[in-house]
Length: 531
Image (cartoon, rainbow, N blue to C red; front, side, top):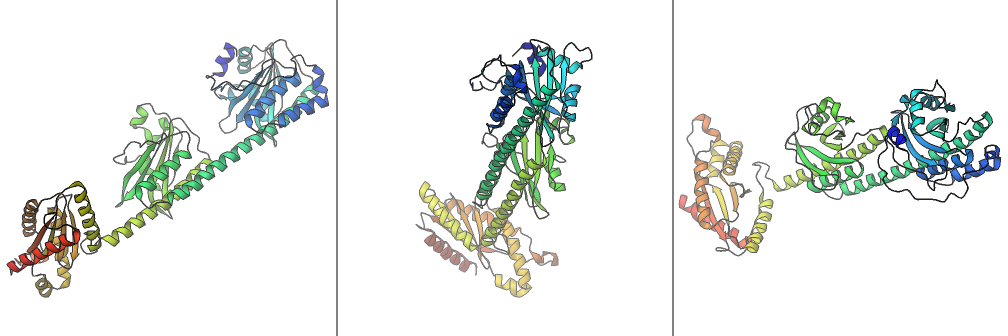
């Protein structure tokens, strides 16, 4: 590869040495092959044999050199959407293999004659000695040390998909119309073969992507635990985005959009986003309920003040609403290190994942709601008897394993029947709610308060001795004395009092059932003392 050409095409380093294949025919092939039908058929057969894009591109370049006796053949793909030309392979006469050095794509518009060949589908011959030669092509030919150049469109199904360049470096050559006609036949088969291989490659990629979607569906329905579902969503989002930097998810809790989790492309846990940036991508996606694909974060208004952009991030990001019907349940963001193009197919595929993620999150929320309803007292919002029994068993097991002391306090309101008889049951319910709130504020974060039944409450005190439990007992009684009751507005000075009974494990009992019985017995002793 010459130095001039490297400068022109902006060559990057080879990813790896391409595999060699034998050149079974000599470089000095008779030029009569251009008009030899059998030679043309042999070349067509050779080009049609491979099934992968690279293999076909290599064979096209090789057969073009052999068929035309040109010095160099370059085969490139043309991207219609962004008007870029990207080199597939380049083959030089006499070399053992076609070079697949990944040149950076270049704009076709910078090469007027080349662009004309692509858009018109008509081949053009160029001579370096032509004083009217466009400057772009002149620079290209000088970089290749070429004296003449034949530009051929790669056409498939009447659509130009690429470009073939035949360079002559040893002499100034002009092809006859008949020779060009035969070369175009070969170029046409080359275009068809390359397009076929590209479609096959696209189909394989789509099949792989659909398999990811299928696996995502299985993994997202395998659990109803929030952490596991979030992890499955992030994992599958990254699998669908091989160029991703990271993915992060936000969901609604109590009508607030909160951080759910994030993951780096490496699989490691990602950064924690403590709050959603007002007016940022996540907030905007959640508000409008539509996907926002930011292909260039550097120049997008949503990232004007982004610290990540200030720190050098120049990639892309997509934010997708996680919706069930018309309700947004969360937002999934996928960030990319480099700039991406989000075409319809890519957006549709990610949209399928987002739909599955939304359904999974909805299922998690429903599961949590059902679980909460099954373990929560509807009147006070405290844990119910069922939740209390489970928690007490767990605490006894934990205390036994780690040799801790645990205490249990049973709490009963004094003369609650009198309150119901005097003020009515609706007021009695409001009293229970007020007492529950006062008790909840008085206990420690590590304590477990439940409504045991009627006007009775139960308090589990982990790692708490009997003496410490008595101190908490006094604190609770004091807090309740300051608690405002429903009849306070009417000027009634009636205060609600309570009786308690406390027992500790393992000093007072060896299991949950006997601990509860002991605490309950002491409660009724205290209650008798208050009468």
